[in-house]
Image (cartoon, rainbow, N blue to C red; front, side, top):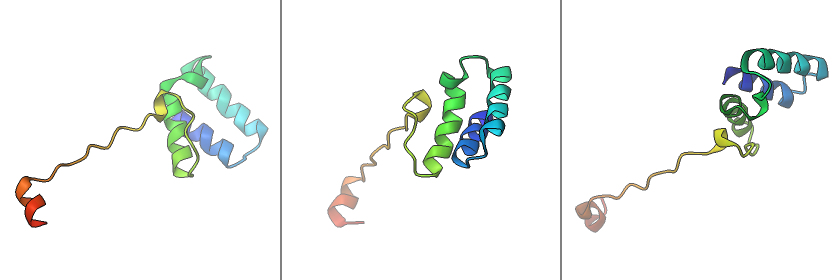
Length: 81
């Protein structure tokens, strides 16, 4: 996940092609050739993207958990508390 954060922060920060290639090589060494679709990497990348107001990459790491609606007890609904 940390490598995904590092990679996406570098992309957004426009650090340059050489630095980005170095990060890609590091990810490839640690995660493997399919790192672009690795769930852990995607989670890190999507965390950075969300923090910057960008849409997620649409892979499993971008699925937000549903917000559970809390139902108040009847007496609170009736009396407004």
